[in-house]
Image 1: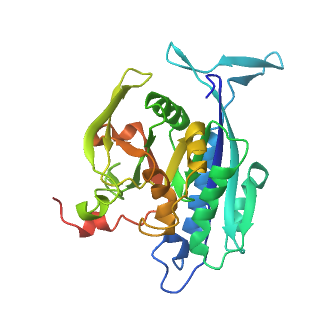
Image 2: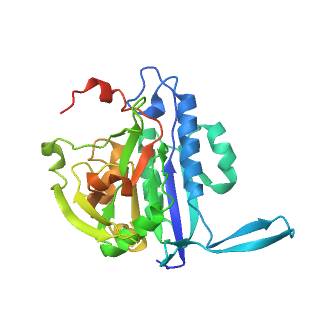
Length: 299
């Protein structure tokens, strides 16, 4: 990875088809078209907002000229790299939200995949991401309702991957805001049953730590729920996976297998410790877990 630039390829599976009774996923819930449009639009807009140049322009109104704003810096020591995205959206046989995609049509490549079972779409997007050439600095697989609000998301990924010598993958915490609770968030990927997660990994607290650019020391856990709806790999990790048989099933369903087992089968999967959750988290843009905040008792 270059110190002056990060090139990132992104693959997003996108499917929407309202069906009576739904599918258990937001992409199939009847009456959810507007909410899904909003989530997809926010997902794409937030991604594109992560692109940056090392030098922006200032509109000098008084002199009627354009001036350079100078390099971007983080604190006194770190000059921020430029970030460019190669964005790919995968859909299936017309089951997509055209009105949400249209504003971004010139910024992404749209792939229409013919599948007998549309549940395999995430695997198709995942396979493209791993096999696409040229291999870029980072490869991000992302579900279509996740909103990345951290402008340093890719910087933190690159920092972590270099620090662990590409032996681990960093997953963010995924959250939903709880209505009426003054900013309280529900972390939706809490611990799974020990007999289930034990088939894939052994959860352990404080397996790693590192000091980020701002001086804060972040502690990382081998998580009891590695799912985040995304994964981000370095170029060397992508090359490693090219020589492997990637899983097509085995972790809940194809959606979760693509997002989670792809990394979990080959690398240690870590998340920031709960005390440091704000260091790396993403919003679930189409909330579906909020009712549990009222239904489940407080432990």
